[in-house]
Amino acid sequence: MRKPIIAGNWKMNKTAAEAKELVNELKPLVKDAECDVVVCVPFTDIYAVAEAVKGSNIRLGAQNVHFADHGAFTGEISADMLLEAGVEYVIIGHSERRQYFGETDETVNKRTLTALAKGLKPIVCVGESLEERETGKTEAVLKAQIVNGLKDVEDITKVVVAYEPIWAIGTGKTATAEQANETIAFIRKTIAENFCPKCAEKVRIQYGGSMNAKNAHELMSMPEIDGGLIGGASLKAEDFSIVVKM
Ligand code: PEP
Image (cartoon, rainbow, N blue to C red):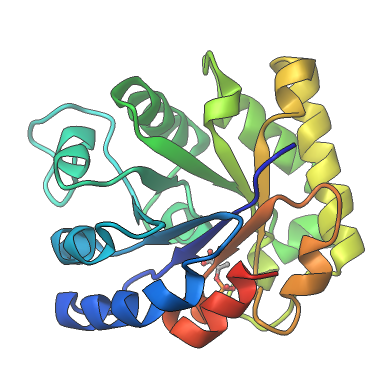
C-alpha cells in the first residue's frame, strides 16, 4: 500500500557537467522502476539535472531548504528558488547537517513546515549515534526527533521519513535488516501515537546507511522499510539502478 521511494543523496559530489552525465546514464537503467526514484543533488547541479530528467521517471530533489522566504541568510536557499528550478523533494535534517552545521530539531521543524507549505516534499532524516544506541537511548532520541522535528505538521502523510543510524552512514556498517525493521516500526508507532494512527500506516519510512546493491534486497524485503536514502552507492548509475530495482 505504500509505494517505495529510493532517493540518492549525492552530498557534495558531482559538478553540473558530471551530474548531467550521471543522470543520462541512469535514465535508461531505471526507466521501468516500480518505486519512486529521486536524486537529491547539490544546489549548483539543480538546473542541469532538471533539464536532464525531463520526460523521465527520475524526480529531482535538493539537500536543504531554508525556512524564510528570502532575506539575509547568506549561503541558504529558499523553497521558491528550489520550486522555480524544478525541485520536488528536499532532504531536511540529514545527520551531517545536524553534526557539522548546527541543525537542530527546531530548525528541522521550521524547514519542514516551510517545505510543506510551499509544496515541496520533505525527506526528514532521523537517527541515533553509536553511543546512543549502545547506551539504550535509541528510542528516546528518535521519539524526540520525530515529535519535535515534525511538530505542527498537519498532514504527516506528505512527509517521507528517513531512518539513518549515524553509525551506519558512510561507514560500510549497515544496520541488520531486523534492526532497521524494528526501529522503523518504532518510528511508525511514534507517529501513530503523536500524530494520527491511520496516517502512520501511510507514511513512507526509508532506511539509510551504507545501503547498496548487495544488501538492498534484504533490507527492502522487510515489511516496515519503504525504500532507501542512498549516499555512496547513488554516485554510480549501475549500483543505484540495482538498488532501485529491488
Ligand atoms: C546518507 O548520507 O544519507 C547515506 C545513507 O550515506 P551512505 O549510503 O553513503 O551511508
